[in-house]
Image (cartoon, rainbow, N blue to C red; front, side, top):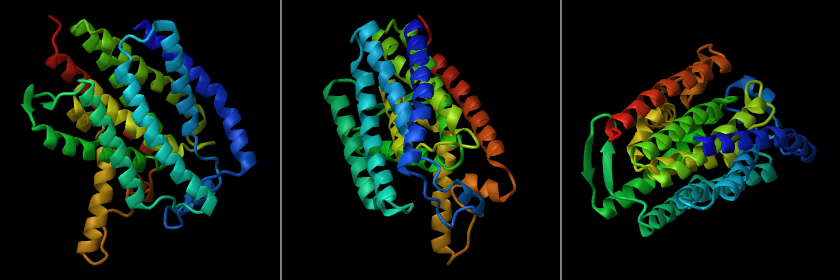
Length: 337
């Protein structure tokens, strides 16, 4: 518990202190967010607010984990290093996308095909490394039901590669309102921290004890970031940040060997991506009709008259409830002997 608390404090401090410098620098360089013209019209006032703010919580997380290596040693670090490595690779894809948007002075960077292929390559590499290092099994546990089943490796490999890419894009879609993706993900990271600490205690597992430091560090880093990202935002995370967070969320579920726990803890992400899929599919099949006023669904609620803070508060509350329930699901599946 103490190592996790230490890295939380370090990550929070680094993010909170670095953020004003980052925001000032990005304003000077005129690296601002470009707003889609077909989005809610009141979002146009956010034009040119500094973006690529994912660097803020990335730096906070990396600084805290570097300190963890110095203070607590390298025992059990393989899992969190792999997860952090995958998330960093996704963040790099996001940075390339953000940079293209900045250079072109528009809100379109990499093509959907380019982004998908890069994300898929990272996901495949991650699963390959996890299996090579014997840190992964093809056994899936259904949350709350204590039902497990084993998939053939090739089926597991293909399916979970697409799950990782899907989660990555779902977190990216959720990043559409001030503080929405950051606050929801902070709660998800808190879940992974306490779940890993519980599993470490239940199974006397030093690896899980060490792994818990990573989500704790991300919690702290996001806390520092939210000081400047909460409505009205002074900085946006950009794809640099949202893809980095998506990699962390997906990777942590695999690291604790409960990938299906992503369904309840990531319910808000799931709703966001499903609303987009439903909207696009129905639009094409119906010849131009829509299910929602606008997708993803947070924009639908905006057009229904709810303000950003209300929508973020509801999403935050839903995630808290689902993460608490999921934590007790982990406890039930792993009783202390």
